Image (tube, rainbow, N blue to C red):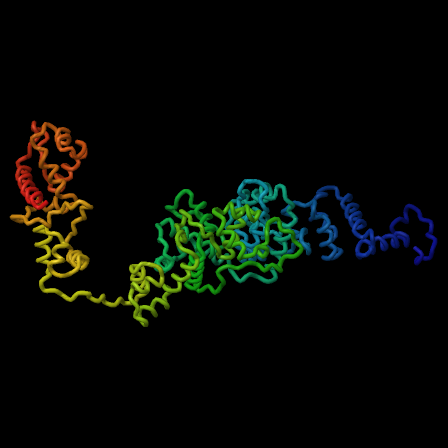
Length: 611
């Protein structure tokens, strides 16, 4: 006022607003409100906004309608107005105007620009940014992480977009169809008791950075290219990996889990269960993300790279927006950079379940799974879902096995150094059959096995069949006769498809050691080729003459009538006809059974004479 000349002129009601007095007052207030430094800078600007809001007849809480009255003042002032009105706005409006972030803006992007942004975004928010935005647990309820991640990705398409592209319309651009479920998971569940500002600010900043810098991955192209039917998994390579690691390859369920994880790597989202999967497949997929060992994760990442190369897609398998894209944010969850990787691995060693690990970190179980996805780390505890992959091996023995059975190393040991299979197996702490199987899978021809004993003209298949099968002689005695080992003669018999009689336990019950007067009949050979041959013959020869099986068992004192019946049934099943006539009293042999029992008594007579 002093600059205007001192005393103010007297004004009439008609002069208000058009004189130097009001111009000076307005200028002074504007300087204070617009330029930081004055003590009343913020308070005065808020007073001006409130006064302007009072002039609106409707939509007083609509920040778009409020900010629209300021567009003539330029984008900087509009941004400040949006920031001041942010707390009164809905989440949808806070995202569209980016009012919660450090750089609010008027939504002036076209629908095509939002469609281009959708191609840079996975249908489920990136794991690292989900860890930051997923609130820490406040109760024992597990968060619906899948719907939360889908909702966040859909919200990423709102900043700067036109009004016709609301949440319900942007979700389908990512393939997200459960719009209400995704939105409710964020606003009415996980963030019901949390401030939405970090979420709104982070998503708005990520959206702006994506528009400026782009993404190295075309997620829209991948969503169209890779499905549960088009993604390929090299099962031969997986079999080789199992042999190298000492794992059980598992059944079809394991293949379903690996294909689901591979598809998640390629598209950035979890897909519905495939046809034929169990009803708990989704839960098993979650367990797989926690329990899958590092070697299996590395294998699946390599499979993802091969799928991309097959379709001539030159992109990284996965990608995360840089941390620097978002500033001035307070995370409701935890940033991955705040976790020490080595300490996390040590924690997994001591934690029996994912819930124990999550409780130790003060996080939700999904935070732990997400960090496992990011770092390709898995629990060392066995899981029935994917097999007990490390139940008996330490990390050191697994590393030794991996090194010895790696393709190049295995070829060097067997082809160049000419080590035997047993030697390589000892180096890798595995069985020779495992080494042999890996050599065949790698296409490395096996060397012919050296014969420890030269061919013997006196050991032929005909001789061995006659002595061992027809005469029922013992293979150990035959080996001593020919001066070879029992093992060698047994191997020769197996190679010639001569069946080996089972051992009779501690009590010798075979008939091969007996000097029989004549060759055994075909029916008798069927019986004595089984274990406990002599005991079975004794039992069945003592039955005739008794009124019942129970009486025969009591007189014999060798067991119950049920056990005796089972022995008789076993012998009759072996020969293929009934030996004892159950209808006769006392019990008597059948016509064919009479000849069988006569031969059996001859054998027992010779056997008892040798004892």
